[in-house]
Length: 332
Image 1 (cartoon, rainbow, N blue to C red):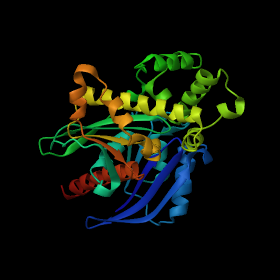
Image 2: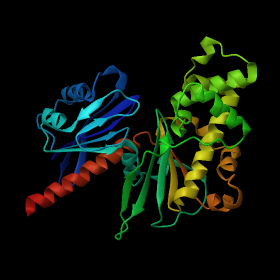
Image 3: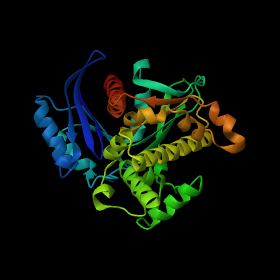
């Protein structure tokens, strides 16, 4: 049985073609594409199928997508693409096309991790069968949660929690919120905790610390701000500290909201690249700065995922589940 799995992102799209024979999965072709190089998901998939050079049509296609996933027409967040299920299914000549939220896929991918795929940020003991949560800053801010069923198997549930209202935790963050409201009618956590959010925080720090935003500096992207911070630039350093403080505030909030004693996982394209910042005492202190509920956060196991294939592995796991259903139907 041939399957296609893909993790479609605002920056990059990671796709693979695999064959399943007697339960053994063999990857035939795998490639990462720059999403900006394509005008649509259809053109991306056409290119991938051409590059994969496989003669059979896929029995199952599973795509992890950034944004709310509903039947019919899917409009992606942070990527100007619209996917029409029936048209894409016909183009790929597949009987089974599955769309799932990108962080729902990441949640599915957690079960595929090994000890080398993550580092522990808060070494609390996880409880077997307890709720798990995954979140992560990247092009956007994703969030999903996992609950064990009666057989102990974790089911993943998507959310759009990254779009809830940003809540400042101190006067500096209040000034940041006022600064961002000059640009955005609605300031969500994603507006702050994302690649574009790093730029906004850096611009705020430039104005807050120097009184001006020089155009050349104000255009710095997240990677440039991080590099400047590591090189000793005081404004960039302040921006990265503020970003990490806010990230910690968000993580601590999720620890209270879900009480994920099974583990709270940080993924996303930014998280692994700022590992040095996340492994500081400052990050964990800000996570636990929850007043009377600080102890509850301290009991939460917090992990930083360093495996960049997480979403792809989750999409593959979902596709494999569908192949099992197909096999069961074939034997009825």
